[in-house]
Length: 79
Image (tube, rainbow, N blue to C red; front, side, top):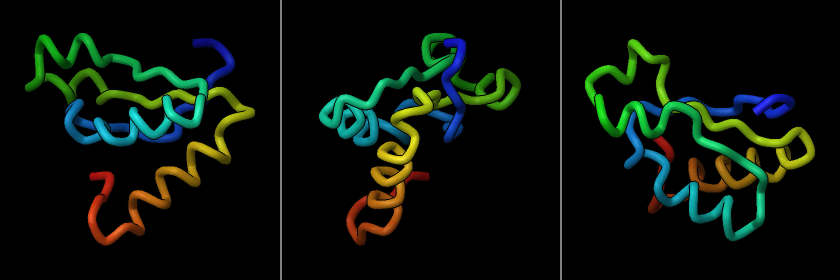
């Protein structure tokens, strides 16, 4: 995704399941790179470079706000 910027890297898909739903709910333009590859070869996540959350430049502030809200929540945390 040319023009999109990486704002977070995850090891496993379970780490961002809630985040994905929140990004979609807020209509943030995003993509998770390497998701399929790591789904097939989960123990190669670090070698592949993890699953990268790439976000459209105009949506970065909203995406970062969503991530910060999850990290500061007592119930949910982004790993």
